Length: 237
Image 1: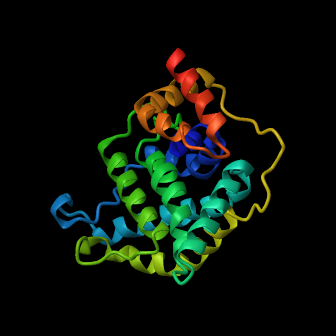
Image 2: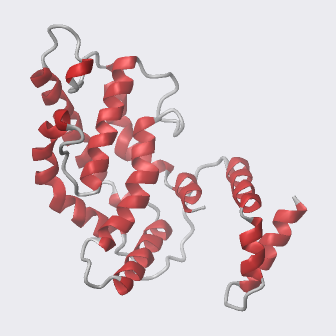
């Protein structure tokens, strides 16, 4: 449900942060391949690595600068998640960072890099070279978001590690900034216009989890009446 809400409200953020870099990748014929088993004959891995690092530097900088574009209500939710995990695991200082990166990068930014057509960033399918570049970029960005360097599992990616090391602190600051909305905003936010698709997706989720909704709606609590209404509407449609 959270994933669907992010896709419905964060389109402007995704486009602002990713579109320019993705369009350059689509137009470029330069490979970023680092895997020795996939390199073409006479292909220079150092040239490929330099190109990948150039893309990553530009893309990550754009992501870091786009925090204010993310909808305030979404950022407020991230802040609530941070407070929740921090109270549950007070000794683990990385949990508050990881809980936000798990939503922003794993479920929003990296899927948009891997499949930009799904997010209406591009209209044509990427070439094999561009598709592979998008995969390597997404892989690198996800590792940075996880604050994890490449190791023995993918040794050919270790050339990206200096980039990850140099941007870890900024990533932590960025993720903490996203959750720095102490109160729920009461302002309306512009969102994408495909309301029918969003409602259809929401209905599909509610139908798939109708048993859980029914169980929760029978439990006393602040959300009981809301869940009963949601369940009733789901069953009517």
